[in-house]
Image 1: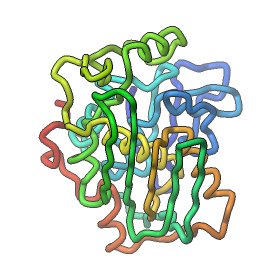
Image 2: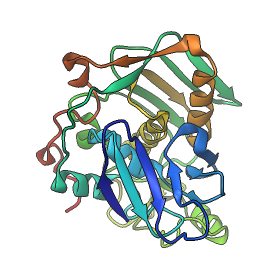
Image 3: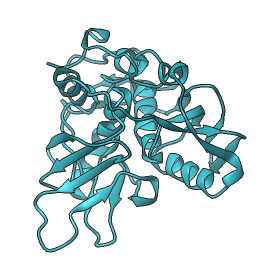
Image 4: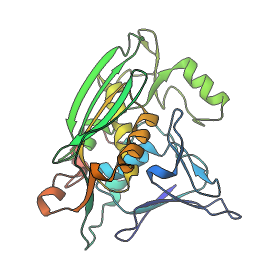
Length: 284
């Protein structure tokens, strides 16, 4: 997989380089999402798809990348260590080119909320992107966790990018049976079994699970197609809820407006001014 630079207004696109007889181009947009079971899959009209895009999308937006072409020779973004850290390391090592063009964003004008059972996700007005998340799991190794974070000033790189996906050993076995997470193991996720953390080395943060949920949310929100100026709140939410939230948002033109960001707003966007030194945990 290779991330190539792109021109202003291009957005993020995936190019399946292994596909010859169908359209290999897939836009990284909310309306291209065709599956949210365990990960986020995007597809085009020909049915060509790429799964598990959320960690890479989080890394791109978290490093301030708004336009890029992702060339990939298979149907799934590599899981690697289960976080965004390896992608962030690659982006920061290569650097980001500033384009001579305005940055546009989606400003939330009024609250939008979606619910599904005990899960809930919402967007409400805010001057910049903030994420609040709450999770509750029966496994004592996870339990009840909450975290709130303003995503400005490199917060994603410093606070979230190294937080890995988490599951039970039984979840890994079930996903493999369904052909998901190819190559996944206890080294590519935080695997728990009741009150025990099976993964060697344990947790990177005491609240690593909720941090990863915030990472996922940022990646799924990136499928809006441009930065969001608003407060996202997720309670027991996941990929499905965040995509459902974006669909609800864009179905109500009175809930948002597209704006051209001034210098002050640009400086508060995720990834603005981020440097490699902002995280000592970013993988080499």
